[in-house]
Image 1 (tube, rainbow, N blue to C red):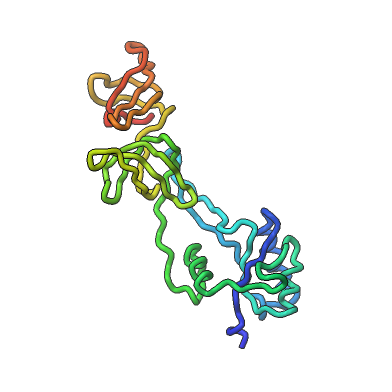
Image 2 (cartoon, rainbow, N blue to C red):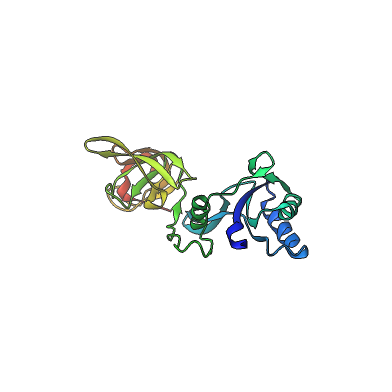
Amino acid sequence: MTEKLRQWFTVQTYSGYENKVKANLEQRIASMGMEEKIFNVLVPTEEKVVVKDGKTRHVSRKLFPSYVLVEMVMDDQSWYVVRHTPGVTGFVGAGNHPLPVTQEEIEEILRQIGYADEKVQEKTPEKKPAVECCVGDFVRLNAGPFTGSVGPVQEVYPEKGKLIFVTNAFGRETQVEVDSSDIEIICRVGDSVCVMTGELKGARGLVTAIFPEKGIVRISDISPERMGEIEVDYTELVKL
């Protein structure tokens, strides 16, 4: 009987109180003997691997800020325990009637965060490191039908892990939307670079402008023998 009534509900909290509500509610469940009616308290978070300045770090972000998911048997007693937990502002629902999360919705959420639940057998796919980039960065695509294409980043969608960059394809400028994990940053304005090949080998300085349609980068050369701005092919550069 209990298993049939087990459902997930969405609980709203004060901003930034999600983890406090989780801890408070779990303490109330134990102290009030509600283990047979309230089973799981979850703050959905997503772990992302981000590469910035050559360093890899793990970043955790809340999928639903100001909300906590609770698996429970809904009745007057369990409602009271959850609703009167410090930091809780109410259940999501119609009026005073909490609405359960649909099975399809909860399974998708649990898959997304890799939550170990007996109802969710599939494993979440391994995430590739995302590359943090900005509008104007000059990038190279390393996967997909446009592999090897280079161009400037035009738009960035960090919440989706995607970006749009402009490259020369089919004889004209083309906007391409790709996963940020599939690109590498060649250079950006302000980077310190060195020319590794060609007539200007050894020149070094800061990137002041990028001309993606020509594959040319302008740098402010600080070499004693060549003071001033120079333009070189991006393939001749290496970041310092």
